[in-house]
Image 1 (spheres, helix red, strand yellow):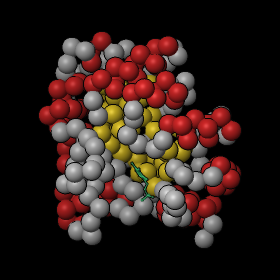
Image 2 (spheres, rainbow, N blue to C red):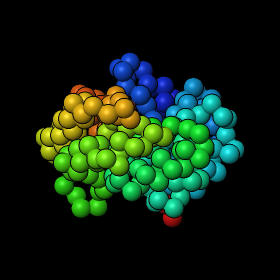
Image 3 (tube, helix red, strand yellow):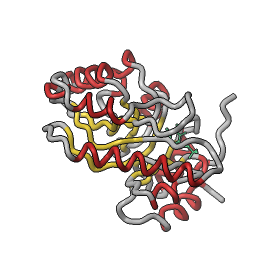
Image 4 (cartoon, helix red, strand yellow):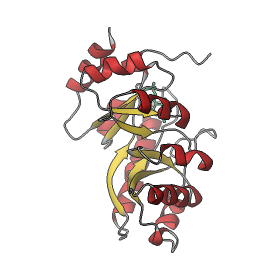
Length: 222
Ligand SMILES: *Cc1c(COP(=O)(O)O)cnc(C)c1O
């Protein structure tokens, strides 16, 4: 099926409260434009440089989401335009995003990445670390960022019972955040679910799914 057909099929089955991020990393602008022409306006990339280049050449009504691990020294390149940074997993990074957002006269929305998978390779905070960040003095002074929710990646496994437990853990982290009063904390988003597991993620409370290969086909990293 074509990109636009894939998109249509996925979107027609999504509940209204679930937002679709089209994960376009490694894909050429022509593929993204096909999705754009089919009505898609939110794209997710995992490398800042690649996202900056695509942002420069593509229509300006696109919302760009950074879904990858963020290096502090590259925040400045995306600060003028990024809509949502999914992978925030430390306070130093949050301070840097705040600094660059301020320079651009913006408030940048961020999600706290929570580690829900058992695999070592996946980044993220524990629940306790996330709470420590949002209750810290430093956090209370960050006027140019806003935490709008949480993001997580489940373990890559066929064991749907395990994946369900992990998604439920992320939902529980989100509910913890709701109890903390802070002017720059407004939790609304639970970003979980990818091509292989988004149906399950939605059942477990996802409000934002990040889907790549089911829209654009498999990726070639060579
Ligand atoms: C690549 C990626 C996705 C999309 O993965 P697919 O399996 O292709 O849907 C989602 N989230 C993150 C963080 C990713 O890096």
